[in-house]
Length: 276
Image (cartoon, rainbow, N blue to C red; front, side, top):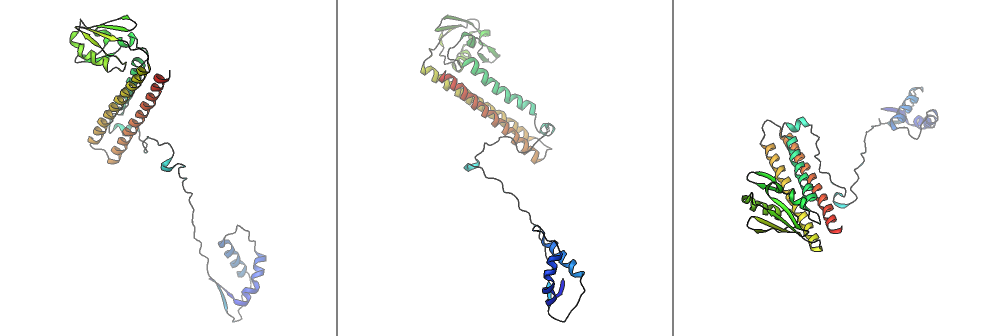
């Protein structure tokens, strides 16, 4: 504590201010030190008068932090990211699940949707699309051309002869009906007749609906893949709960991203079918 005689303290104050250099940016501590240095250099006298006591100055350091800007729109505004918040290495993920197999299954489901759109959902049904139609049987998956003889009688009718494999007629009819090509097979013994639909507004709308059906099937497939790998991740032993949770979050984020791609592909296909 600095003790100054009362009268002398008042008298010397102008001298102090003239003798020391104080800028507008000087801190309280710098000012206090300058006063102390000046007084210590002066002869000390005391006339017994009252004492002016200058208390030490306490400097408290504080720091203001900038606040995060709120989203302009209510409810977050900006586009949400589906990516997992925690970064994981391939080694960490592989300790919990086979991420390569997961990504392959997710990718194949999306590729199949695009293939179905390209081959089956066109305004004018071609015999080539019917030839390449996949048929799932108890003996495996085959293209229709491997199971039947296919001919186009005229621009409005395709004939499918199943004489060599009549046992597959039920699954072939199912494959044709669910192909998305808007086909309605008519059976006569071992032969299937396929009337080719005309390009009308109703035909366009039906194809657009079929595109939605195929997209929904793909989303269901993606959810099944996700749930399968989530179960595998949670059943694992020897891994930390945090790691398992982060891997599960990654699986769900990847699946959601793929579903967003499905929605985008569906929108493009429907626009093509309805507006072209």
